[in-house]
Length: 555
Image 1 (cartoon, helix red, strand yellow):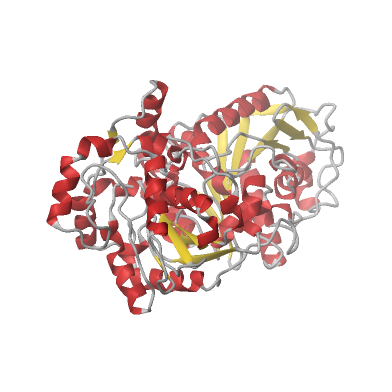
Image 2 (tube, rainbow, N blue to C red):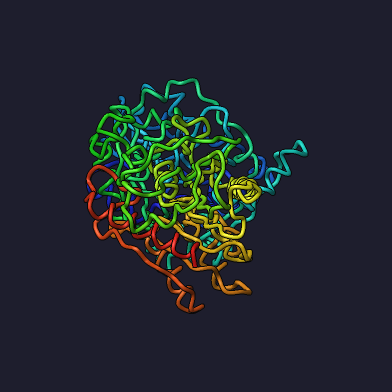
């Protein structure tokens, strides 16, 4: 997006030094060099681009696919190699490696679909694998930016351009971690408008590209790593099953969204390894054991009846309370509990909210995951009403809808006569963490505690949320007009650096506000836990965190 071949200069030099033939293809668009693709377009090329600006503004995805096809057709009998942003390299046979970054993966995949017999591998640099019939606009990270082209499409036009970002706006398109000030200045100076037609026209694939081996290069500072992709695959999304194929590999680079600018030498090395078929391979769901989200709950829980009402499941305390679950120390919580048929006085409730995004139609659904149902049953075993909520967070653009689902569920819970509507705790997991923001910004009097387990507490760079996003718990806590309710945070020691940074920022904001925060650590725990984590650490941490929440409900 917005760039030309110059961004590949450093990577191209290193690939060429390694013996690869490289072609960095500048795709049509106003203000972009058109005479001789390559790392250093001349001044005449710039003049030619300006003269044809109107025509180039009419360029669309088909135009760019044809340009990459032409670059493939121009490769004859050259040594093997790679190239970028619709770049090519290879031999006269099936030896060409196509490399696409960001938007560039769309024309790369479209060209590979038409020249599959000549393409040895597709490499997607910090980009998802596009699907047939989906326009590139769907992959634009900044949700506010999606609105302008969408309005143009609704009006029946694909003409016009999307202006390039200003120097301080590149983070709306991805993390700039690792990019030097000089490189960022040059990126901004060379940026050119993006024709709207390139974003609005759906990608059409015959299926031929599906047989071409593919490599994904994930830039972890932009928010996604191999472990996270494996967890998404484990959720069972059919669209991601192809990522477990034998011809699909992955690499990670600890940098932001522009590795060709931040670490060109490392990227060149990864591209050469990808061309050789190296890389990490994902496993199909369940092939390497129980997925993390289906791992058993670490503590013993009572067998309680589930009362399902719409997207909400209730677990009520049973007669006899907690004896045999956590012993007499919690027996007093169950005094008066008479089971789901009625209790001797309303009980406080803990509402557990799953993370995401979770694919629509995932089986089992989140409220049936052992971790979510286990927490609710355990809370009920301690004398509170345990509640799970299933919401519709299927994409990062769905946070407003998910927030509405959670708010409606809380209203339903508080309206139940068996629940003490003035003693409610909300507990969010993982990617559900941003939903905390609304409750931090304006906490109601009945909200006695907010809890979060291995949460994301600020939008990750590749989510495309603006700095003033509503779903930013760190900022919500810092800017709230009133003191937050007591907070309980279950933190894992082996969290990804990107998520851990959001937790650190949240705790710093809590310190500034002098908020009451109880941090419970799992020193050797991973995000979401799993079979390789120390069970005793998890048991102790979950027990302590639940006890902290219930203590605040009783206060």
